Image 1 (cartoon, helix red, strand yellow):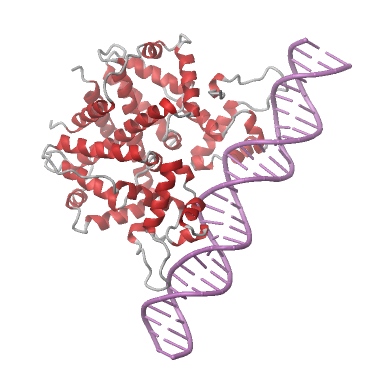
Image 2 (cartoon, helix red, strand yellow):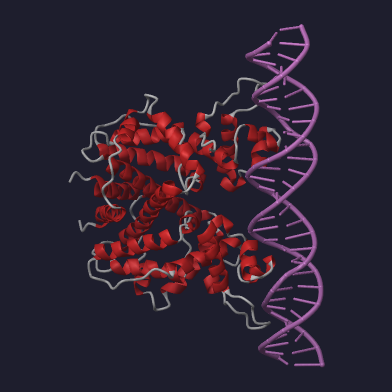
Length: 230
Length: 230
DNA sequence: AGTAACTGCGAACGCTGATCGCAGTTATTG
DNA sequence: CAATAACTGCGATCAGCGTTCGCAGTTACT
């Protein structure tokens, strides 16, 4: 029978031994600072240890694996989410949550990488879930439908925010792979075998809609599609 | 000025020099076989080289980086998608595409990892996009809305399929982190500070709905929410 | 006073993606 | 037909990664 222990169920301080020189929050802070500046890949055990002035092996007194360190970072980032008072309108409340999620993700783009495979459960990510459930508490649909809707909502918010970040990078940065994809796409669009894609490619109308309006429109559409009181 | 070259715009065979002993398809096949059996992490350059009977450095004659090898694998997997004839009903056609995507992803779960950050563009992934655009070609909505809907659709399908795979693993496998998350979740649900989560946790009704029905219901909801002719 | 459980951490291990340079092969060129 | 240029496979090697081990020092319980 393995440990099956979440880091959040493990006591942070031991009862015996010398006082730890650091703590989970310090590791998380150092990791977040690194990731904000240079991306999630820059968050190596050695780099975090250096930022803390510690030896590389010391981190393993606080965290059993790098993955767990990233969990700490994700949860810490979710602490920045502000929960507005409920209005009673479930759609407006969920939308507000989605906007908060987007805002924090734009501030910490590495969250998209860190939560790509799964969102770790910690105090703050669970708080987010609790608030989302609270927003739809009075809604007369099965609990399962609510959970599904929240899961889909998270996926959609991530996808939209990822697109937003990618386009923002295209404006100024030098994101290598985008040029390659763009080059191939233009090539394919003009090879005569992809008419629909060519048509879509040609109709590049000026997007007068703001990013916020687009975000609101899509999230609203998805949520109403899933949770309309049938 | 960097190369900005997609692998699909590079000629596979050079005009000069000896005949290559392998080709892109061989690399992709070996990679897919490894990933199917042991996950994407098992697809190391050395492992693929061994499977091919080649030296580790030889792969770089066909692929500039490991990422590009994964691109080949993703595109090759998308070759397994079967495109049914269009019915004229855009919702039915998009739904059929979504089901195909789900089917192939269930057959190659590592696709979720390989396409988590972005879906690479290759002949077969582009073909999928072309078919998706074709399904909504006659629909009277702006092109931009169609592209958005397709992007959201992909995100939702990935999220749903990921959940499905996770639950299937829970049935038999031994996925370490799930126990930790479950343990923490039950702890949080009974700490008195998460009433909505506790309520949701308590109402674990027996899911009589089949996975297919659930998939259809959610995808339909999302699509109608996004593309309803307003 | 003794012991058990911790602390930080230097050194090391195995593995990874990637590079370099060499010898051999082929198609083009003069 | 020789010369050359452009490729081929690949052994050897590099820097970097996550992680482990064992040691000396520190604290709290018995």
